[in-house]
Image (cartoon, rainbow, N blue to C red; front, side):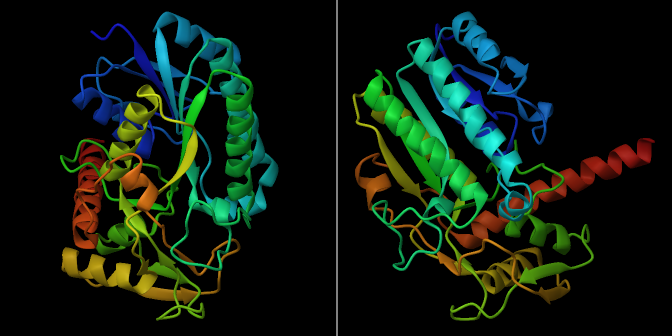
Length: 337
C-alpha cells in the first residue's frame, strides 16, 4: 500500500473516476471525496477509500488529509452544466467557488503543496481568436465559467501567499469512456453531446436536439474540441509529475487543437453505431460560444503530454460501448424486478 495518498474530489464522477483508475494503474494511492450528487459509488474501485461529503467541509477534508497522509489534491468536484448555471447562478457559485475556497484553505492549513484544478475553456467566453491560447482574455459569459475563473484566481493568490503550487487544467469538451470499459459518463442528467447522441443511437432517447444552426461556423452549428477522457486523465498525471519536479504554477489548456461541429459529431455517431436517429433543430441555448478550440502547445511542451485517443471515431466507439453497458445493466435489473 502507498505510504501517502492523493485526494481526488469528485472521484466517483465521470472524469474523477478515470483519474482514480490512472492513479491505480500507476501504482499510486487515491482517496476519494464525493458528495454523490452526480457520482456513482460503483465507479470507485474496491479498496479505494471513499468518503461521502462536500469538498467545502473543511473539517472533513482536514481529517482525510491527516488520516491518509495526503500529499496532493486533484479537484474535480463541481457543477458543470452551462445552461443550469444561467438559471441557478448562486448555486453554481456555492458549489464551484465557495466550496473550492474551503478546499484550498484546508490544503493550505495542512501544508499541501500540490494542487491540480479541473477548470474549463468556459473561462474564455467568446474568444476572438481560435485556436485559443492560455494568454487569451478571460471573459466568461456564463456563471459556470465565472465560477471556475474565480477558483483559478483564488489559487493564484493563495500560491503567492503560501507554499502552494497548482496547475489549472482548462478542459475543452471531454468525451468518450475508459478504453477497457471500466468507467464512463454515468450521470442521468448528462448533457454531453457524444453521450446523448449515443443514447439516441441505442434508442434510449426518442430524438437528439441541435441547439442553434445559425452560428458563424462552416455548417452553422457550434464547433468544439473533443478530448478523450483517458487522455485528459493522462494530462492530470503529467501535471502531478510536473509539480512534483518543482514546476511553477500555471493554467494549461487540454484539448487536441482541432474542432468538430455538432453535425459532424452526429454523423460520426451514426457511422460508428450503424444506426440512424431523429435530429431536431432547436433555438440557441444561453452561454454557448460558436467555436472553442484549444491551442495545445503548452500542454505538450510543458507537461510533455501526448494524446493516445486523438480520433473522433475512437472517442465515439468508446462512448458507445459504455452506453451499451449501461443499457444492458438497466435491462438486466428491469428483467430481475
